[in-house]
Length: 306
Image 1 (tube, rainbow, N blue to C red):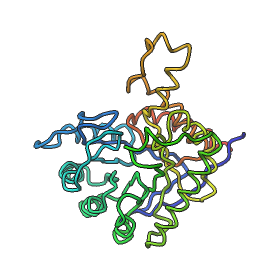
Image 2: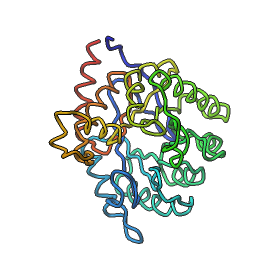
Image 3: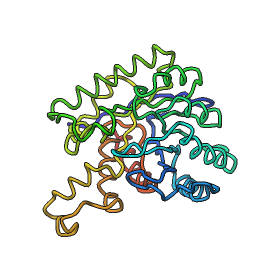
């Protein structure tokens, strides 16, 4: 199908407004966790100054990230659950130090705990990115409404511990399910008092969609435009990309029959990012900022010609 122009929006955050649509906004992932699926332990320094996290944050900002998304709890299957207090002990020092060194940085907090969201926003973050779409903490929507922050609602099918046993989805079931349930989460959020101009939607690649179930979502991502809100796509280094690489006959020798490493998923991530942008995504959430910025520059230029 031919490409169509991307919609334009003004995303109202806690203290500022971001124009979305003219060019793709890149959100850099900063996990201060010991066990995240891709970068667990790389930027986590328990009991120490968050030097490694700050170095990575500066690197991503220098490479063109417009937002940094800071997470303190892994949501991979079999991850160790945290109390909100433990999560806050990981992320709040990073937020404070980062804003002291780079006060203009736009920070998002990746959490499904309302109390963590409140502390992070009070510490200077602008956005709450909740992978559960405000399902896992009943106080999240009212908390975000009171904080008047930017809000990302992501679609999740079940909890991480449920994913291995979820019934499979047929290709024609994926998009209708995501559309219907995101619409429900949007209605709940606005009913709680969150203004629409503060909300971005994320279809949740990999979150309860197993392997090839993600491709119908990527192929028909443009249908999320029916909701008329900005779209965030986060396919970075996801397992469904590695699975496709492992199945490809031309790559089987290179991968020696194994699963692609995180580094080996970069080109596949770039391909997914470009597909998402051309389908209407306004924000790309990624571990690898510079490749995403470069890919977005080309995809944006294509969209400019429409």
